[in-house]
Amino acid sequence: MSKNNSLESVLTRAWLRRGPLACALWPLSLLFRALAALRAGLFRAGILKSERLPVPVVVVGNIFIGGTGKTPLTIWLAEALLAAGLRPGVISRGHGGEGEAPRAVTVASDAAQVGDEPLLIARRTRVPVFVGRNRAEAGR
Image 1 (cartoon, rainbow, N blue to C red):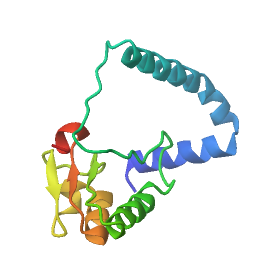
Image 2: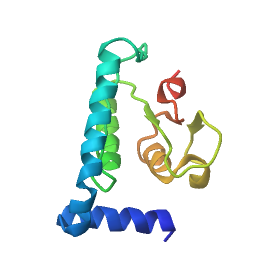
Image 3: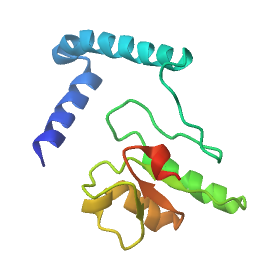
Image 4: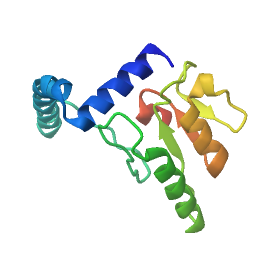
């Protein structure tokens, strides 16, 4: 396990247990809340711009560290949309991948390059999957 994964694990467990470490981190959560509210206000004021894509977009995500079921939900959603006769695609940040982005994820992609979760989604659903830090760019 890498240092990042063990730190993530420690922080997740501490937060869920609501022990002394979680209490010590609580002021940081207030700072995060304030920054999130500021960012939302900047979007509402038109100072920060969002980008519209030419297709409908469903966002599957949250601000929790992981293990909340986003990947299985994305797979289920893609399969349900396919069954309904639609042609879904998936755009991901490609967390864990180290390759250039944006890039397409195929069933033959290397998880080290594109991330293990986008690769799993591509293999399970056979829908187009792209990774990139700028997801709007990856979706074009």
